[in-house]
Length: 456
Image 1 (cartoon, one colour):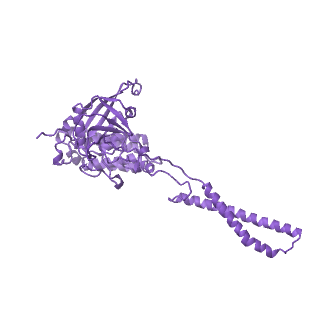
Image 2: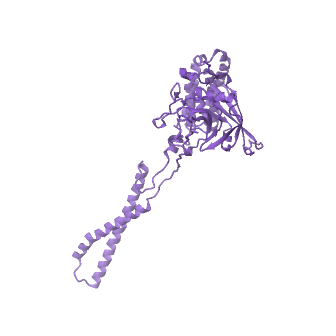
Image 3: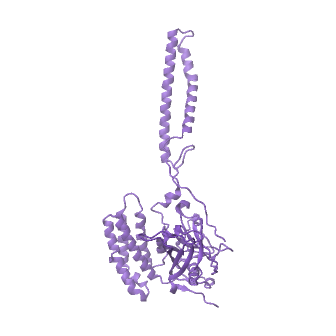
């Protein structure tokens, strides 16, 4: 079984050095004392020999000793003050400088953690956000969506919230929605116009619409803004889905022999404990013998991979299949053979997927459907070649930011065909253990978008 999920991890620690390293201080003290001895030998002794006679009296000797001790004490005190001054200067230089000094406990705030929590980080952190961004929709609707998505990042700023900027974003979205209504509605198929009109009105004047969101922002209540924003983005996504009834690109001729999903689908999996144990109870309920998980399949970005998985579900290939927990994934053990679909990844900013090609995250390439999301669903690699996905084995990815690289990205990002996300039952995933099984798997939505290959 070929399944090279990385097990590397980075430990994130943040510590601030507020004092000099003791060993360095000791070395410096020794250095100053050595200098002091040299200066006593080279400066004070010749001077004293010139001042006092060769055979001094007892009184003269006493005065000589007092004066010597006084000079040495004064010089030593001055040296200590000099050392303290140097320590203070070096401390402030260390704060201002990005380069740590040797033998210092330098700042070690992890770059991965810093980027991950930055409000400017635009990598989707939830399946819902990734799926929303993946919808190929009208340009005006995408502009509205981007303007609203920016508010999500502004809300993550821990200090004073920039409500003025948020208000500007909503006003921009509202203006586009009103001024370009004809263009937005024209992108909706004729048979869905009525439903589209209802969604459009809800987006403008509805309870969770843009005007309501604007009032929440004026009240400067982050909680209300968050709830209102979620409602507005949901309305935007529903409108975009109406505008995208099928694929926005043509599949290469050689890939028409595979089943494909030309849009969205939903698969419902019922998971059962293999050892007779139970899952944690839902709020106010009893422990459960089974748990239900829903996965949204995205055929817009991975039509072949999602299509092959959907066909396997329809054929009952996953009913009664056992699950295995390995590293950060839950892997299915099904041996029912589907299609050996080529590795399929849609890069951000592109209009069609790449096939048999991985992405280079180090060079800034990111997929539309990232693996670095808890509950991402992807196909394992084929046993024969990593240019192809397994014909049957899929896995749930249990993303953990503590085992991620720069920017909070998985070390395996861009290496697997992600085709969907767990949207219901994510809290169940960590309770699944090796030996648990899928009692049943059903395609509850999207049957009309599943296209089977024409046999020649």
